[in-house]
Every structure is written in C-alpha cells, then in structure tokens.
Amino acid sequence: MHFFNPVPASVLVELIRHDGTTDAVIERARGWITALGKESILVRDTPGFATSRLGVAVGLEAIRMLEEGVGSAEDIDTAMRLGYRWPMGPLRLTDLVGLDVRLGIAEHLTATLGDRFTPPSCCATRWHVESWGPSQARASSRGRAATSHARRPVFGPDSGTLCA
Image 1 (tube, one colour):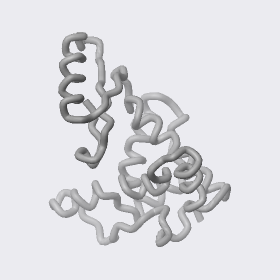
Image 2: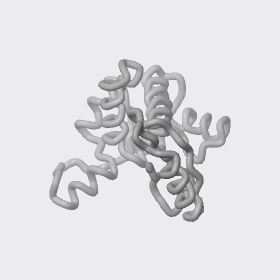
Image 3: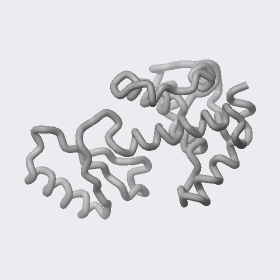
C-alpha cells in the first residue's frame, strides 16, 4: 500500500499488486482502506506505481516549461489549479515534497523505464547547490545529512530564477 502525505488528510491509497498477491489479500486490504475512510486504486507493481509516475512526469514537464520561458512558475501552477482543478500546481507541489525527492524518483524512473523521465539538467544542478526539500531538512535534524544552505522554495515567489 502506498499512502500519501499528510496521511490524515489524503483520501487516496494505492494498492499495489505483485505476481504473488492473491485476490483474498486484495479484498482484505481494500476493506481495511475503506474502514479508514479512504479510497483505493489497484495498480500493478511497477516502478513509480501510478501516482508517482504521473506526478513526476507532470512536474518535470512544468520545470521544462519554466526553463523554456513558456510562463512564470505562478502562471504554470495557476493553469493546473484552475484548468484541471488541482489543489496546487506541479511546481508548488515540487517545493512541498522537495526537489531532492522529485529528482530521486525521476532518476530511478529514468534508470528503470527510460529517458522520458530524465530531469532537466538545470534543476538537477540547482538542487545540489541550494535546494533542500523537507526530507533533507528532517535528515539534517537527525544528524544524517548536514548542509550550511537553508532550504528555500525552488519555484515559489522567493525562489529567484531556476534555470538561469
């Protein structure tokens, strides 16, 4: 099962089926998910499942659009919020989960599924230099990773220019 953060506020749970999963296990898991007040989708055990693959694909394309000057970060995000009724745009979502997390998923998907998930080089370079997502901030507070750079939004209003 793949839960989304924050778990109490998120309704969706991806139920992952691998070759050895029986129908009885799937039905039992669905019942438990329903009892939690959540909704499940059933996907095959593949890299990124459904949601991470879709989220990374849209997020990477939004970064490429920003890099190409198609629109500002705010306008690209607004397009998805208003045009597709997303609760937040893909660039804001990348700031929320952390560019480090997005790039880690993209690199894994590139290695397993091919070049369509290759991240834009500008953001790969920038996150190594100045962007630390929430996962890095948590790791740093536990002493596992340390940086002298404060985390700041990569795409938000205080981020400066990403792909300059």
